[in-house]
Amino acid sequence: MPKATETTLVTPDPPLATPALESPELRYSYTIARGEMGVLSFEPYKSLILPYWAFRTVPIAQKSASVLWTIFESYIERGDLVGADMTRKFIQMGMTRAKRYANHKGGRKYGKDGVELEKWSDKEVDDVEDAKRREKEEASNVFKTYWRRCTASEGYLKLKREWTLEKKDWLKGQEPGD
Image 1 (spheres, rainbow, N blue to C red):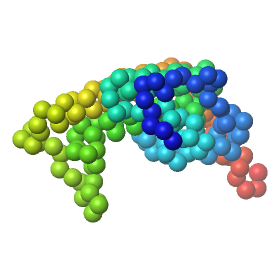
Image 2: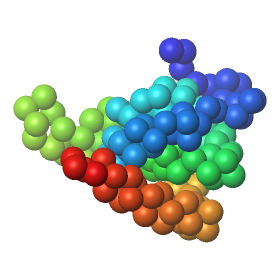
Image 3: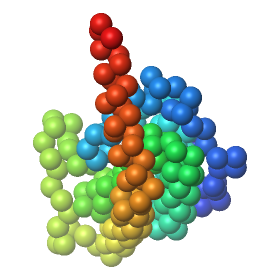
Image 4: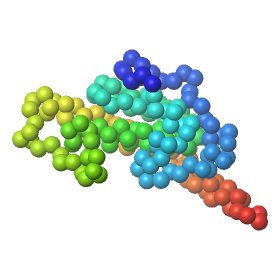
């Protein structure tokens, strides 16, 4: 897949598919979970949304977050909680990944041995590296603004409540002997 750039990050037209609305098994196999859990493994949504996610520079992060917000709103309007929540997770992941690059040289939090790598110290940062760090921090803040909009969205919160109740009922109906 080609890397996202400012010119390739455009709102999808027509809107992205809503496979969870067509399949109760898919819809209720989804787990909202904590933070970004499952964002890179829940198909087909991962493959639908991933091409619109990028954070390399502030302009790219701004465009990506804006497009992802439009996708989020589209899923809300069509009643697809799974699509909306997956999009929220990508927005949140933009915030956390950009922040990781701002905090850790090379963007790696852990070494090959699993031990957390040291964060940059002001002593080791030259002007070029400091500019890169600041840019990633700004990119993180761009996504953070959109993430807060997602988590505060009345439409999202309503869909989440409804979906949670529907999933409980669906799971009850799946129990053996019913």
